[in-house]
Length: 106
Image (tube, rainbow, N blue to C red; front, side):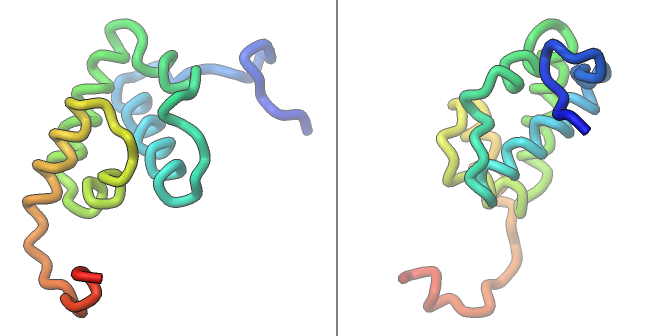
């Protein structure tokens, strides 16, 4: 099997804003957890392009505000200002009590 590239016929961007937002969030998580480059990628630029891209970005912002765990996971990344603001807002909503608070100070 060969890998999909922009020039191969099986390469396609997600069409719906929801699918684009999911792909963006997956790429951000891959960068945060595994160090795979995504924020500076051409794929991200293509996912954010056009009307569907603007809608997907709004869904990403809503997802960051809604999920404290996702927001805290992505905060160390060099996010764009609006995304960072949404992640910080989402992280403030985390009401879980840490099991080992002394580790947070370290």
